[in-house]
Image (cartoon, rainbow, N blue to C red; front, side):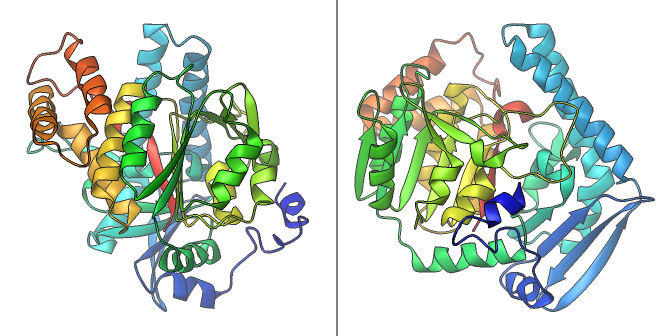
Length: 404
């Protein structure tokens, strides 16, 4: 499949093997970590400029990664077939918790100890590790609001396919502005994508909103050519077996496929794929993962926020609202990590007070109608003031950042 993409004119270097010069340049701004499972044990390579430190990870064997990934994805696939089943939902949440806890000891903690907790870290997860939420790896910690300490508490993760792709993303990020946003949303399927899109549009100097019949593939393509940021409030599918068929499902069941996106030659500072989900391949897993984020990066996007699994629309809207509030043209990885920590730890009473104050004061980051809709939906739920309803990994950790 990689070879098929490389045959597309202009994409001959897609996921091509970088040389060490590429690696050193990519690690000049922030640490770069390669994480790989192998037999008899895994390895992390921590690159800082031209210096490389190897961190042995004896528990990160190829068999262990495959077994745990298959089990986690199997439980997720069962849940996706019947999302109304609380039993299946609980089984998947338990599986996600277990794999994230295992990741802490097997892979993440030794690397974080070597890194020394920099503000942001670029990570190239090799093979099946690209399907697992490394940023949500956790260990017990009674001093925190949730009783856990997560990897995202120690550094913000920016995932990448390889050093060459990360370096290209940084060059684009430095050259591109973030003045105009194209927001496409599907309120017929996803009720909270409309206020989310309004909030996204409000965060930029200029905007275009598309939904319903006008949101055709041609209209989205034209809007992308004129925009710096793309916000997609719709479903999506990442086809790992045939990556060119991965797509965003626009309103009206129109498919914007990755193959067409690759031919657009985009120049986007950021793409935010909100309320999307990936099509998981079950137990017959590929050795490498090629999906929408890496495809969008290859198409010319500097950074991509995308979800690793389906999550609640309301929680997603809260997270994205905080993300746009915090991201002011700086690092999207830092803004996303901060938004995730906030959503995870905030109580119902704290969020209610914060948003009511913002609405009363006319805060620029919270448009009144959109803010009222999201706040009313929260107040309609039977929650205690001290509850932290978004503290589960399945809620706050679904989004991951790729690029720069």
